Amino acid sequence: MRHLLKLVVSSMLLAIVLTSCISSKDKEFNDLAAQAKAHEDNFDYQAAADVYTKALDIKEDPEVRTKLNNLNNEIEEIRGVKGIINEIKTISGAYKNVLSSEDLLSLCEKLTKLVSQLEALDTSSGGSAANYIDKLKASTYYFSFTSSIESAQIYQTVGGAGHDAFTDAKAIDDEVTALLSDVSFPPSFASIN
Image 1 (tube, one colour):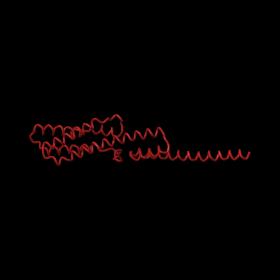
Image 2 (spheres, rainbow, N blue to C red):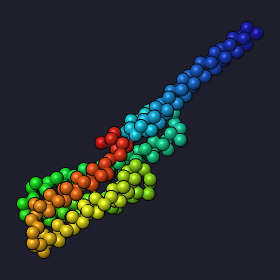
Image 3 (cartoon, rainbow, N blue to C red):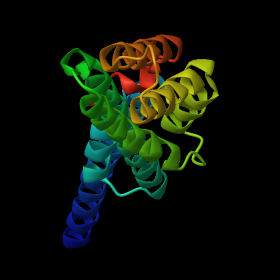
Image 4 (cartoon, rainbow, N blue to C red):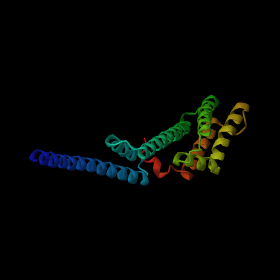
């Protein structure tokens, strides 16, 4: 009888210890998931992804895994868009080095490739990167920017009177500046490098 009582008491103690361990793991998981959601709501996507990963290290959860996967996809889209935009700024800012028609045509060729990459990006996800691209393309400054590239190429190719390469390159840079002032990066882009 004593042996049975010891066994029952030991089993109960073990159950209490295991339950408290499980409860503390669940609490830690839930706290991390809530922190990650708060980061996501504040557009700090990188911090949100890091905290979702920590939560999944504690316990696998399909809902949190889906959120992390979606967030990682969004982060990659943002990186891609930022990369293209930053490259456009860098190349258009190189107008200071344009001394000839060949220099300008080279600059225009590089910008045309970047515009093509931007146009080819899939915006069906509806995420912040997709929304940014849609706003960019809808801006009248985007039309002016792409038109100034085409005009510069035409004038430099056919030798249009009154169009020197430096002035045309500066005009393109001015259009880029106006476009990016009109459609600035959304808050969700800030934490993504």
